[in-house]
Image (cartoon, rainbow, N blue to C red):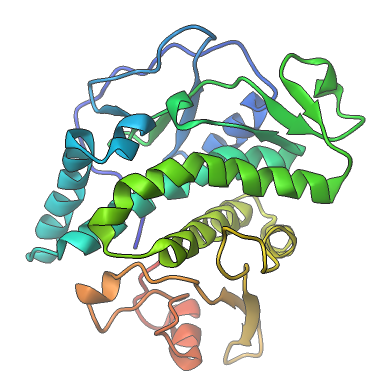
Length: 294
């Protein structure tokens, strides 16, 4: 299921804060993936609301703001597929389209600069039509020897494994209230919801790693980040390799959850879906048939 961006009227972009320890990572992210831009707000200034902006705390409340957020997904499905999707499918699509970029707020600075920001829900706002996220950076974890250790909000951790634990904790702390807000509409239990969170972490950074020309490193580091037995996450990065008709390696993985796109097009499952057999994966990955990507 693609993270698509509709055509809409421009909305004002909030004024950016001075560069922070994660600014360079976000600038690099936008260079390779223009569909997402992260704007940092100065300390003390409110996050944007209105003009298409929705605060993450509003989504976590599960009320009118979430209704409006999911109405976008409902309209897109009706426009693109000429049919209505079940309410739980719409909620699953909406969660994906929030969680995928939200995870990148944390994983990209870790991957590029070994810095892990913490974002409570109150410190993020999303403008989905333009692919914008506004954030307030207050504290971050880093390794000894990082020049950023002298900056306000820095927390030094001992080593790479400790920093990976910070990534897992930062994503979990941000997504936990969001999953609570979406969960009742999705008809999924906690294990399934955290399986989705696992997939959003892995597939977001895997995709960005490919754009950066560092796909293999992204796969290796995601395998170390999510090796399994790291609650609340379910499963592991689960990368494996297939072979194309010419013997070329084809990286793939097995998702811990299902995005439910098959409910709209049963014949067109995602390439990493547990429902997709290896032969079909090879066909999709070698471009000999249309493929739906998550």
